[in-house]
Image: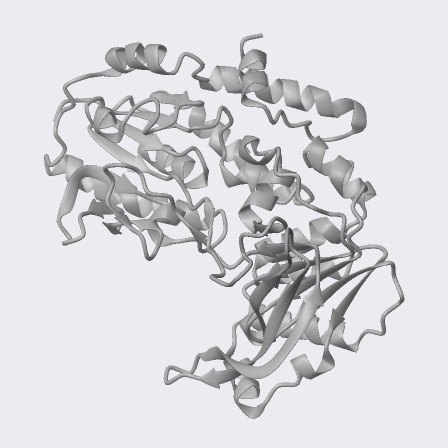
Length: 455
């Protein structure tokens, strides 16, 4: 194999940057990494997924900036694989291609009425309030007094909190300006979170659950019956991890609180699943079924619907029940799991045959699990396999190099953003936020980003 080892990474989120950092850690010029993203802006869900009122989580971008400063690193923003350059063409310019494109699509509920206006995926809603260019025109209907969020993970809690928190508390964040204006005019006074199982099975973490109870002028409502544990769940609680035990304590505390009569409420409704979204021309309500839990042979619990149903009036429904990757032409994809087919990061065909020189990491490799840091170990595993293949002579020399790639991108993607250009966008946003004491004011229009990058 010729030196240096040239690797293309597609997707500039956490997994992409962790993979790049691991590949470039020697700093001796033996590896070159070109990192591609379809947006001008890097950092993936750190920029467009982390809640605006959680700025401490975004500090991780300092690590990514150090990676971008390493010799051999190049960034190609505003370049979409499949539109501007195909996966096959990438292979012509690199020894290896590593896909870290995340899981951008919401899982569907699969119930009647899901496609009514006012029924949205949480990923779209999160992108909207975070200023993702794809969702700046989402315009969610906040004119009703109640919203329903389906799911029991941190994203569901983020959505509920953003709808319930006083807008004044968001004015010092990098919430997108269009979202601040819409939330300020919102009529929503109650958010109902539907969890299909019980308090022991919640997928959220302690800080996010505690935050709900700390919102000024908001009551958190939990039915006391939902936190009464049967013998099987009491036994399960004794062996549960620390996070689960603390979650149960927090929810039990909420159930014991006397409502203050605050103007806003978040209702945590356990053992509940939507079976139909109601409405004619838009969402008007949700019909839900009460679940009971049945214990499986492995000791876990599954939700089983009962005959008890209820209708909740609502003008907005957000589903947050998981995420799926999006297929790329020419890259083997598992439609059921929503991931790129792989074994330990090596991409494989359906029959298990390894696709030489093609790898994956992050959510599109393993599914949407873990926190931002989880992607570091995931990326390192993939890079370890990639290096092993390189050392074994399994990576073919690319017939074309960096100069040919630059010529191709100059023709196909004339508005390509390199890392220096991203730095100008970053500086512009930060400067715009300073007068109001905000970390930044995000640009949400790609053409405007390109213009700023050239200034």
